[in-house]
Amino acid sequence: QVRLVESGGGLVQTGGSLTLSCAVPGSLFPLTAAEWNRQSPGNQRELVAKSTSDGPPVYGDSLKGRFTISVDNAKNVVYLKMTSVKPEDTGVYYCAVYGSDRRYYWGRGTLVTVSS
Image (cartoon, rainbow, N blue to C red; front, side):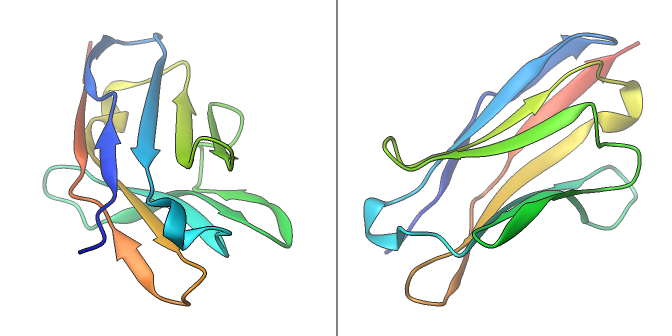
């Protein structure tokens, strides 16, 4: 069974930084796309960042400039670097990838809590 495993979540103060990691099975590389999505309490899941093999990264509204997605093909890891975090960034962050098998895979999420 293919599993993506997110890590790096936790408690961070407003204005701080955090880097999330998503371990992806090597069999899924090369990736067509990789995403980070999040779900905040009471809200629908939303796109945070998306990296594709044929274009620049795409970011959710108000996140560009604060968040950066990257893919390390050598380590089979997708990262999300979060800076200048705000309380509204609190939520469960999910990693998702489109693998070389043209299937879409999700992780179980990692919780990020930003204290004010």
